[in-house]
Length: 101
Image (tube, rainbow, N blue to C red; front, side, top):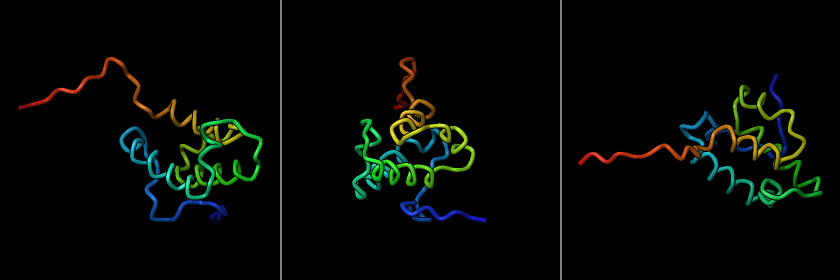
């Protein structure tokens, strides 16, 4: 049985799969949330329950079941956003890129 979320992303939206597509997913979901005037609740804690609900719905619908398990205990969209960022954003200062000429 599938659950339909009212502010879910469309079925052709590329779901987050991990670090490999996190950067492109983050841009796409940001624009989706901005279009629904819900992105601000992901970066700043707010008491706007409707916008928070819209953002949580979009975030949950844009990740696979395994990732939902990682964010299901979050109480608001900002916690979800921060948790996903912590899990998948590559902030390793020791990583470097080598150019082959």
